[in-house]
Image (cartoon, rainbow, N blue to C red):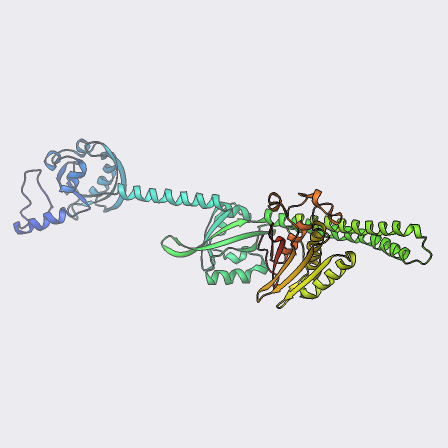
Length: 496
């Protein structure tokens, strides 16, 4: 017969089958950290317990040994009894979880329990009971799960969906992404290749992005379950999923943004068509009228009394043409967030000569000078820069006295050209300088050519469209100087 581990209740000596010299080692083993150990007889009375179990229970061992479990641990005895019964019958119970009130203050504890016959082959001899307090671990696991759920909720709120994948194979899909793809049971997608949900024309670039581990956002189209294409933005990151290194992707549905962009593009296209049509529609009759006026002015049989009247009509036609052009430019600048330019290789010096020649013919008694130095070639919109210089020179002619000189100075440097229009006898009041380039601000000061107060606004827009800037300097000592900086190559707007 197998020798039982114990035979008597507290106060009894260990069985004679256990050598005296082994008792310290046996005691150390039974008091090993982490496990509470007890011997329970067939009547569910405690025969022995180690120090850890006594500490967990909150009572000294001598107060517990010899008493029934239901007396010592009333909150724990009900879930323990079935396990003890199984062990009494000869079964080995391995690490099962039980919960109950345990200890002097009745703290709810979660215990991992193992139980086995105290003597193999002799179930009735009693039960060896091992208990480990897993409460802290379970709390940590619960907190970790709550944290994971919290993070998933944050991710779910911050994007339209997310997924985990390993080498392109779905491991987990958020409900939001499932709904976006038309799958209300996301389990249907687990294990499938991501590229099955990507539109065919985007599969090769998507595979390249995944292979390279790109973390920057990128756009593609995914396939809804019903075959619809949905434009999305995706951003990937390294992640840990169930203890292994994988990739996580966040997904944003950009359908609304794309639709808005398409509507905006259509509106911009329509606006450009309308403005071009309006410009052409005004230009044709005005040009025809100008030709008629010119023909009348050169007609040999023109009555002498009508010459001045025809001249005034011609001047009025030119003024209407300039006002219409200004209004169209103003509309383009405001609706398009800037004026469109069409660049080519331009010699700014040649443009300036033509501008001054035209102005000199219109103002034969004025002193107009061109001072040019350096390389004046660059990539610009020649027509727009002619408009810029003509407006600045015309502005100086209007505001300066008839006796003053107007100097158009061009200075080429390695990275660009400075255009200056200087009128030494013109002053701009300080209170006007801050709003000089705003539209409609100073109509009372405008020339007949600029009755709407838009010429300096358009000049600024032309400079900005070339990546340049404009400023004004004005004082009693040196008059007024408009300074335009133009980079040699057209570039983004740099502001004023």
